[in-house]
Length: 345
Image 1 (cartoon, rainbow, N blue to C red):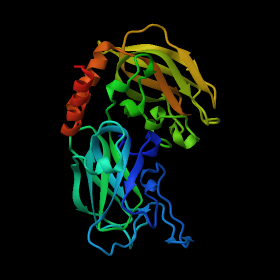
Image 2: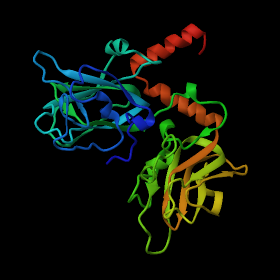
Image 3: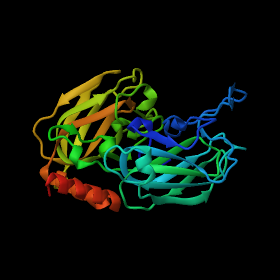
């Protein structure tokens, strides 16, 4: 599975804004973060209940499609069209397109958007995670899944790199590690029970399964994870949250940051943790860092890691340049038109 976040996931705020048909299965299932499930011989008024999006059998020309608003706009690197449990009713072909638009467009406005192909019309296998690599260096806000001609898809995963809109980053403190703003796990020692991406996911963990948990360490050493911040910034407050982890929380933890000179500096010394507790620590004045290493002693699980602070002026400028360089042409034109209307440069 890709370590990149699923930009379409409901956990990040993704949603299906339009579907041509959803007679047998609700289109909202496409962005459900949970794995698909199936209970045989479970019938509702419209037939066997499927955990996915399923359209009726098409009797006229054309094909079905659904439009998904990405929870985190970004550069798409991989698309997974998961047909789990759809065997005699999966689409034989599918394609995926994407667009970038300003504001909150309606389905009618999206229908007129300039769509860019991410996955050309391609054959699908039933009851399979159909994986497609994507190499389109643009930032998108929406994707459109088309199935030919009809059928069922359990999940649509859109893995990629979040690219935040700098116009909506507050001037004060923000979570410099936030997944939805572009924070990323670059390496970790172990992810046996839970992905380290969960550490920087939005919102509180609803269960132990929504955190990062390692296997029981039987040798020496300790577990750790490295996180690249959204950009270089000064950390003021750290939150290490062990909520839900009761018999398996780390005994202690520490934080280090990677400075501009390439040297690691101490952010939080090795500090005792309590189970099932959000821990907050004020951080003394330190230079800006671009990456953080969390060490958990000796092992265990943690629900969330928050690193609140301010971006440097240079980091904000770099974020703005990257955002502008990745805008699709149609959205770039919208941005320029808005600047002209507001009289800004």
